[in-house]
Image (cartoon, rainbow, N blue to C red; front, side):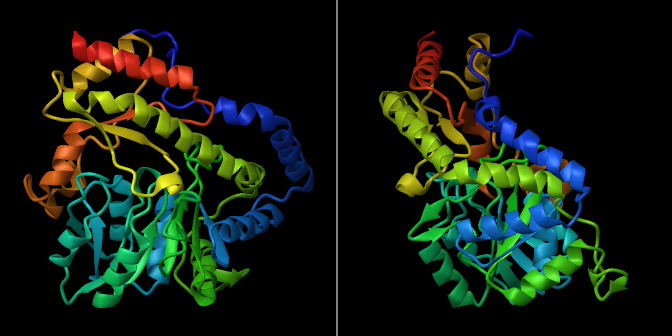
Length: 379
């Protein structure tokens, strides 16, 4: 493989950052001058702005998305031994957070078209110990709010959204994070809204939950040196919050750009379906924000995923896999299931391929990617 920079990178953050870099540098300089680094004005401003943009009242910034889930579950009164339903084809952080909250993750299979959690499969996973469900809004597409609310109401479950890939995604009149009791976001740099390091947030309409979460993130103290809870140190720092605050007003346009890019991919890839190249289905129309644009290389394809990925790399096109191994087949988590338990998730992980996707990705670049796929299939 060539060591030269890719002709078409998987992600290009510089296209976002270059136009707003003077604003970012100026804001960072202001914070340095003020010495306001932890739990300061910039954080409070961003918490309010992001929560409002997501359609809820409260936001609590934490150190990363994993902490947003783990501490958030504890703030939702999830107790040791409670069972939580989680899709098998999520990033491992979802599972780690459930375990950190001392709950038990119960995996279920996914829908083969959308890759989202299969709520029909989740029905069979309900027990007397089931306390919550974590719908993962995978790739930037939300799980159906109406179906999710019906499911949770029938089984008296807490909905805790994993919206780490779904900043301002929409479906059925809801924005990601506004369906359930609480939701967790990640601001990892490559997210649709990313900071310059790690960062996360819990959002909610529950004032008491938000208060508890603020206590948990700050050593269990709402006021200095008075520790009313067993907490930890997990705070979104002011520098990162200031950067995110500058980027937030651009997010809706960035999301629209991603959706338009995805539409162009879909049009160009349509003739390749008979050759086994099948994009993950969009059931959310313009509400899908395409953090990831994923295709499946199915059994109809004349080449496998590994070969296609290598051929694209030879043409200078970077790709990714989200995710190559389902949670129950990860070496550290084999107690969660056996091979064959979640066949659709396992097939997805064997076939999925993520194509370049970012605001600023041009139609010409998309056409180059698809033509390279066509050449690879015809070799």
